[in-house]
Image 1 (cartoon, rainbow, N blue to C red):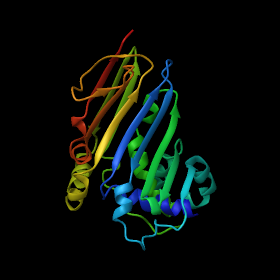
Image 2: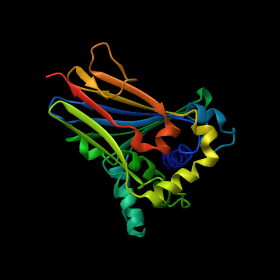
Image 3: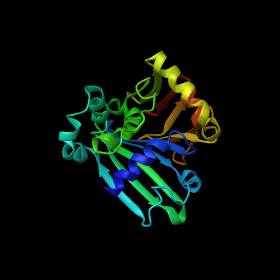
Image 4: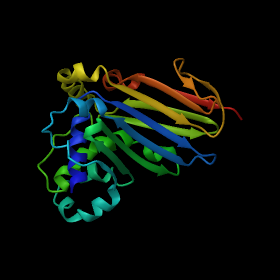
Length: 245
């Protein structure tokens, strides 16, 4: 599966080269909504040699539904360890849209899902990292795991006109391993960004983020940080938003 091959390659490379992530959430009045975590890998595409396996001769613009993929590969997945199966299970609620156009230097990757309550996507970023495990499940060579996967957890809450996003380190040893592994990639990651973009059903009354910017209608908040900084200190990003009644 050509798309799958590209997905696996991109998922591994994305944590070791410069790229720009966006964490975007759309909220409805009843608290339901949609999350999208994506990255613009155009810089990464430009850095790749012409012989790289992701530089295919054709343009790819396709969507992969992980629920369908996991069902299709269930026999192969059953042979994996319980830990590996759990990693893949994280992907089940998500779909993945990939667009690769080597001639125009485009590589966009977006993982998205709908939710009834935002707490359902607490594990979204770890799920994105788990996408690199698709390789073994699909019969490819085993792929290296990002040591940060499972070391941190993000919690989202949205009720009574108040939204909160907070991150916590849940495995200090594993987290330190992930920080140590970043040394060789700091030159690339130092120019990477992570943008939070939240769309609310009402105007924003206040937020604890002084550097945030807002849309003209006051319902969307945007906040950009350095990707390397958030990897080294995920707990430093605490976002609180209160909406008008």
